[in-house]
Amino acid sequence: MNLIIPKRILSRRNFLQLSGLSGVSLLMGGCGTNLLSNNVGQIFQPLNQTFEELLLSQKPVPEFSISEIEPEKLLVNSFNFTPKIDPALFRLKINGEVDKPMQLKMEDIQKLPLTTMVIRHVCVEGWAAIVQWGGVQLKDLVALVQPKSKVRYVYFKSADGYYESWDIASVIHPQTLMAYQKNGEPLSVENGAPLRLASPIKLGYKLSKWVDQITFTSSLFSNKGYWEDQGYDWFAGL
Image (cartoon, rainbow, N blue to C red):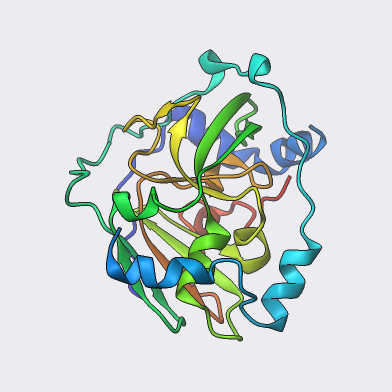
């Protein structure tokens, strides 16, 4: 897998964060195509015994009420670069070790069941915000492409060159979304439109914005994630 390492500028805050990562981590630890139409009925069918067992073992994280949303607290880390994406031309490519690789338009994705959740987004830099995200459960996309039985990891590539890898159990967690809404409104470009990861079980740097490719694999590559390759924790669970 060829990964493009994004040219990002480390701010003073990022540099200080890298140098003090261990302490911060401990602190936060406390706190409509025919193809789609033909496959959408498979979403709730078992993938195979391994994936079915994972699905049954998932436990939801307690959510918040609408009144607890903190819109002003969700900060935007742009790193001086926001990709320009034409929503009409956008395609989410899903490939790798799967039986049915796909390229989905936003209209295809929005035909899948919409899930909303009000959760706390936690940044490793020490801030957090309660946000309502809306989108498609990632496990629904997993069911569509039918991963091979040996798949254990999933890579997410973003339009700005950012890359991340997750364990498959976290990917199919019921509160892991490919989000296209924030606080009941269409997702803004600054927050990752047209698609971004959203989940209450991972720190913010795992929640990639501008995701345009999802790749399933049975093993991790040498490049595990943009920040992980600079010393951050790979699992980054909450």
